[in-house]
Length: 154
Image (cartoon, rainbow, N blue to C red):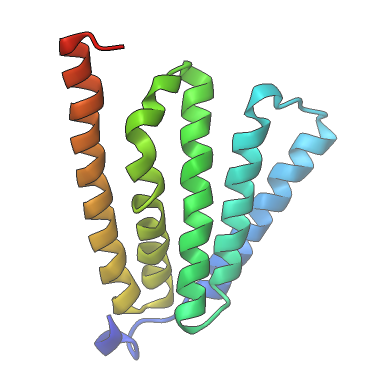
């Protein structure tokens, strides 16, 4: 992507503005409709905070923006996993979902940051982190879910 930087535009300001407008709309909807999130309050605020931090990272140049994007997506992944667990009641999944929070979350942040900023280095690092995270997730899923279920260990 670095070699195509002259041909590819940096759309970070547009993406950041859209994310900020989405967050404002979500908060306005929750407040104006007096919506009670109940048990989904924590995942909602984690996802909103992660999205806000990620949108902020798009306006930061260099390695600092990449690190901020990684942190934002770590919060997003934590919020999404908590939302899944609260919705389904599958609290036992904590044993094997940690690789989705780290390194997959930061990998998604780096990948999306690199794609939006038209930079190949963060994009490639993000792909590697996502592959490692998904591999660890599958391995831990096999060990914790299938093996322990076969052995009926509790």
